[in-house]
Amino acid sequence: MQIKRDIYLNRLIARRHNHRIKIVSGVRRGGKTYLLFTLFSEWLIDNGVPPHKIIKINLEDRRNKQLRDPDNLLNYIDSRIQGDEMHYVMIDEIQHVAEFEDVLNSYLQMPNVDVYVTGSNSRFLSRDVITTFRGRGDEVRVWPLKFSEFCCAFNRSNSENLMDYLHFGGLPETIGMTTSEEKVVFLKNIFEETYLRDIKERYSINNEDAMEMLFDIISSSVGSLTNPRKLANAFHSLKGSDLSEVTIKRYLDIICESFLLEKAARYDVKGKKYIDTPHKYYFVDAGLRNARLNFRQPDYSHVMENLIFNELRVRGFNVDVGVVPVVVRNIEGRQIRKQYEIDFVCNLGSKRYYIQSAWRMESEAKIEQEENSLRNVDDSFKKIVVLGEPTPIYCNDAGITTMGIYDFLLNENSLEL
Image (cartoon, rainbow, N blue to C red; front, side):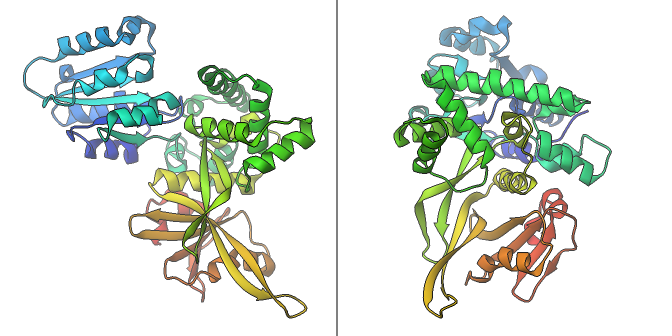
């Protein structure tokens, strides 16, 4: 079964022939190769490109080991380019090639070559590499399957799909697995043997226990505000460790650079400025987060929040955590300053949305709690509460729209409903 990934396919199509190197990035096993070698390649053929004009090179294949040498790779590509027609060069896991920047830049001035590469690690997207490209690279970031893509693989109810997705996430390889046990083993192994090992080896992590403990803390508190100082205190109280704030910040940056986590900064909605600390961290995939915790801590409320964050990022939004400062009177009648939090402030061009994630709103008190921050935003951008259960879409007298998680996730235009 072929799962469509139209949002990324369309981004590649839009970038054809733009005289830049198309960089398909993202977490390992997230579907980059399938997108490039299957979906995009088939689209090119369907639109008249002869198959021999599509040059595919998988650098993770042992049979292509000699092409990890930059000169061998250059010579091989040159040998495949014949005539003036457009050729499409697709290289998987380009980071295996030393001096790959020089190889890729060699084709930028050739009018009949369009280059696409994938890369999974932070070296590929480090500041040094981006500086080398100097605007000549065009990144297409790929996430694991989002919920609507995930649902296309199954003939079952939305609620069954959501429970499966919240537990095991959307790494494409899990789709063909028929038992929970198989998925658990796969996710735990790939976390330990691929992601964690990659990080330790790539960055020469000496304090491996500290790195693993940091993963545990972040996994347990996904979607909670934190900072290096708070985490250093947690290390001290839990393990008696004196791990410094500087080291913790470095570890967090490494994990984000490796595409496993994303950081959401805090934004003062009324003051229109960013707040340095604390931040929130979200996993690129719920299944990986749960695997790190041995599937002991489902915590649907925070995992759904993580799911919504990823959906917004896939749609192209920049996502921050909103802070709404207000002045209220306490029970003695004195004025005090208070801060309300908005889960997500989402920006894309001139568009902005304020979004709250709520697993359930069973009482008036809970409704008031979720809506307070939105009611205190004094601009005209749309304000939305997403519930973790089916509910009719409605807008209240304060202009706040409430919708269920399925309407939000399964409709690409859900923010306009």
